[in-house]
Length: 76
Image (cartoon, rainbow, N blue to C red; front, side, top):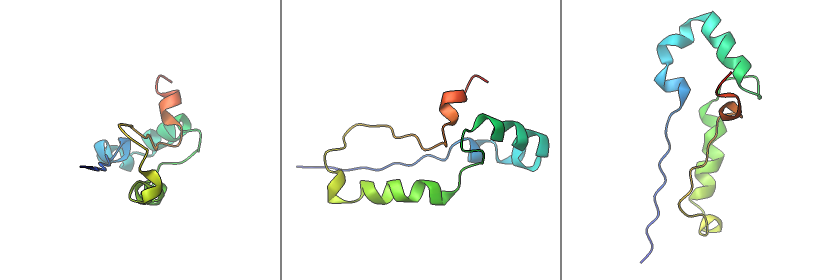
């Protein structure tokens, strides 16, 4: 028996949605992201689509972070 589950989690964008109205906060947060911009649904969708394909059948028990590299600069 094989069970597959994909669970996407909205990141900093959703948790701090109220802060996105604050231009100073957005500027500071954007500086933490090497890509230089906040993420969009279109940034995550291709990964989710891949995980639904047979080609991803060997991917198991992973947490795949799609954050534009922010995790690297989390302590800045």
